[in-house]
Amino acid sequence: MSAVPTPTTTGIVHLGLSNFHRAHQAVHTAAALGADPGAWGILGVAPRSAAVADAMAAQDGRYAVVEISPEGEQAVVPGVHTGTLVAARDPEPVLGALAAPSTRIVSLTVTEHGYTIDPRTGGLDLDHDGVRADLAGGSGTAIGLVARGLLRRARGHGAPVSVLSCDNLLGNGDVTARLVREFAEALPAPERNALLPYLDTITFPNGMVDRIVPATTDATRAAAARLAGFDGFVDAVPVPAEPFSMWALEDRFAAGRPAWEHAGAGVPGAVFTDDVAGYELLKLRFLNGTHSLIAYLGALSGEDLIARSVARPAIRAAAQRVLHDDYRSTVRVPAGVDADAYAAQLFVRWSNTALGHRTRQVGSDGSLKLAQRIPGPAAEHRAAGRLPHHLALTVAAWLACVAPPDGFDPGPHAAAMAEPARDRLATTAGGPLDAHVRAGLELLGGDPDPDLAARTTELLALLVGHGVDTAVAEAAGERSAA
Ligand code: CS2
Image (tube, rainbow, N blue to C red; front, top):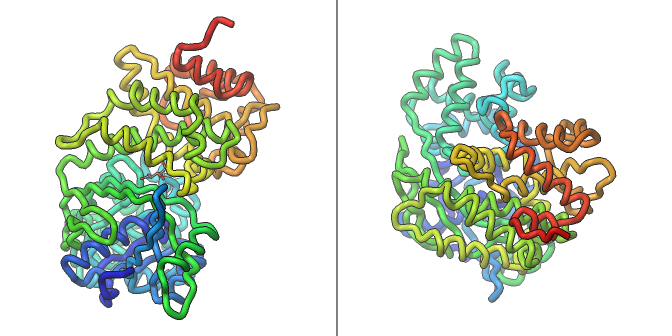
């Protein structure tokens, strides 16, 4: 249950009322305020959907985080939200909150998809309809909304603020800063000239976020009812989460921050470090990169859950290989971190069957997620003359799931994955496999390396022709001549 009285002042406006925010930043903020109270209540802003925002409002901002481990469940009630809004429905109050002098942090969990990045350039997608509408005065995209909120601050009191991305993007603060700046530069002169100098006075700290947070189910609601014991209402929007949580951040906050270094509410304190890049690479590659491979191979094997997927010997072996052979050598492990222990712990975290984390959730938005996970390490291996077979297998398994070659049925879990590039990839799915693979690799970024493309094509042919076990054995160089 909540250890802290709900704060009354909003210090943080958070965009993206996702389960991830509600089980990570909100819980770390509860820990911080439990140890060191302050004016750091969170106003939660949902971009479009009113479901969670309205349910939370009806519950006075309270909800339970149900921590699920194989040993059992326990509930924590963060109780740090001062209110909720829906940006598409209430744009004016949201802009007002972003611009309020009492707002000292603007944070985001809008997923890789929400940053409106052009995958070809890595910059802001100026052809995106939403970005164009926002440049003309709207505030419908995350970057547009942040920029318009900052513009209002710039034209008003001019007090500094920090913009804190909590998404799985490499250099998430730097990326957000660059996108906001590109947006500002594309504005008409009066707005541009007001916003650009203000951007120099604020900060965009980088951070690494880590907690596995599945979607809410009826089982989560039943557990919350059993464990959280709210008086007078049934929690409609509890969040399931694994017990593990980690947050590594740069301590560059232009207008202060909660004392997130404190442990509490079931989570350890955040790590403040100048080497966030090391933590990000470790996490994005060891965890997220391997997670993607498990999800795609699992879905292709008919598995609904990550835990059941990683329990399959072939998938477990492939996960070990991608992590240790293809990711590990590309990560400069931060001082004081035991990479072996982190890797071993990952397999325990992924094996948490009770958590119910689904292959379709991790496999969704693959074109955007893999762009963060594959091209960087693949290029490092190619530059050193090595072929990263299991990165090729990851791309092949992604394509088999979301852009299956004609005549191949990847099964219901793959079919249920959301993929923004599905239509685009479908245009090459009926043609030669090598052209299809090239199109897929191009979408992840850059000019595909020919050897990587050829290896990916071979593995895709095996996946769709002979199944997961054969493709895994081939990637590991263990396929018998027969
Ligand atoms: C997962 C992440 O869906 C995904 O792509 O890899 O959401 C993962 O569960 C979190 O990043 C864990 O910190």
